[in-house]
Length: 71
Image (cartoon, rainbow, N blue to C red; front, side, top):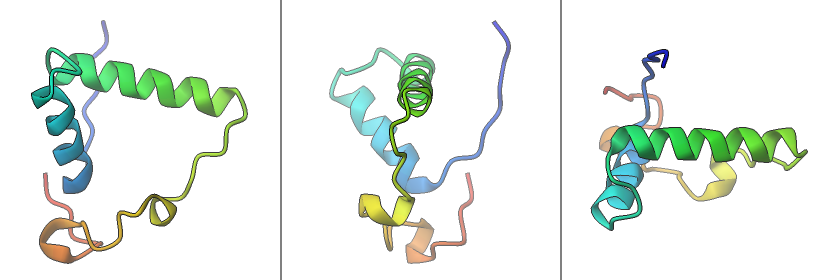
């Protein structure tokens, strides 16, 4: 399987970690594969992908600075 490296905003990393901690996924690799696959399927089905601002993530960036994500 090909390997992909990505940088994620802290708020997304925290949400993925919470899903893993709740037992939704066995590990990070499984979580990312499932979530990316679901996102691609929704996108291809013509589903509107809401802008990040519409998802209620304002102010959740690292140290409350939206443009300063370090991972």
